[in-house]
Image 1 (tube, rainbow, N blue to C red):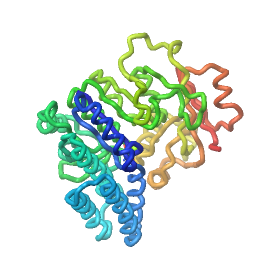
Image 2 (tube, rainbow, N blue to C red; image 1 turned 30 degrees about the vertical axis):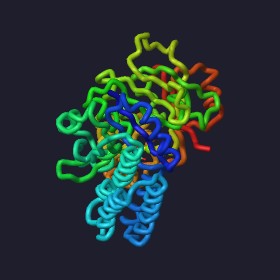
Image 3 (tube, rainbow, N blue to C red; image 1 turned 45 degrees about the vertical axis):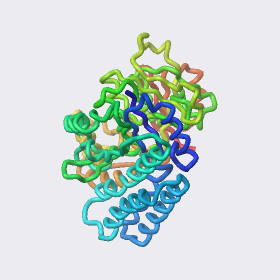
Image 4 (spheres, protein in one colour; image 1 turned 90 degrees about the vertical axis):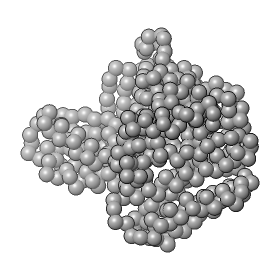
Length: 423
Ligand code: ASP
Ligand code: MG
């Protein structure tokens, strides 16, 4: 039994939905469960709704939501779905409209998760109903009935024990009998509040199901051929990696390779479930197979990999009292960074200073700015990108780094990193 995942790019309009339908048709004997993310750029559009709502710009929030509704209902018409389906989707919108009608009383992240989940609920419903019109029987499952998390909104942590129990109880009996269509990215707390697993989290959802259902394979369908040695939009010498170990793939995604969500690989690796990343456009291509490699993982047989992580901000923290950055102070630094939820990507320290490259996220930086002053001073440099090279020769380093202005540099076995000014 396989678990498939389709991302937003594969289901952005009627033609691409039909393409996905034909892929599912072709593989229907093997698939047990399909994880769907929101259509095209719907999650970004919903983020705008949430921001307007939180800034109490309600007419704008409603207007933006209306645009999302029109797009989805138009798609239903184009796919020839029934009025009953349209009514179901409209009801999903009503749940969000109710939230928008009252002023926000709780924190931003809570409302974010209650509203953003609409995207996946809509897209999965449309796919499910469309497949039925194509003669592919399936059952639509609200993932919030099975995927339990804590209430760390926007970056919720999976409660594995409860999730496993609910999957065993509600999903396993369907395997081999009914194809299950469900949503990626979202989950729920014990109190039935919606949560999310962080942006692009649908890959992770598919891995959670693969783990809990002991899938034979997980397949992510993408608009690229598979995992490449670099982002082909940035480097024309990027080549496909037909095979990859879990370890190498984990390293690549950790440093920012966007092809798979970083948390996806651990659950798969734990049960040795192979992950195939392949193209929904070039379907005859096998893509990349990530699995346990038998050959030893020495750098000689690993291809050079380049990963560019844009939108980086360099933070320099200095102790206020000229005291050394000793272990206690460093522990405090990481405690404060963790509290702010800033994502740290590379760090270094000296006698009096600590440098860290974090993802540029204004709201989280503001949190840090409020909790830092009693302990450290802060200097912020924005507009940077982090380049990570793995298994690269000096020639390749020269090629990829050249004369760029370097603000921070790190070196560990097989991995070299440069924080440079973005062009
Ligand atoms: N729809 C969500 C996002 O765009 C989750 C996903 O696509 O994986 O981040
Ligand atoms: Mg996506």
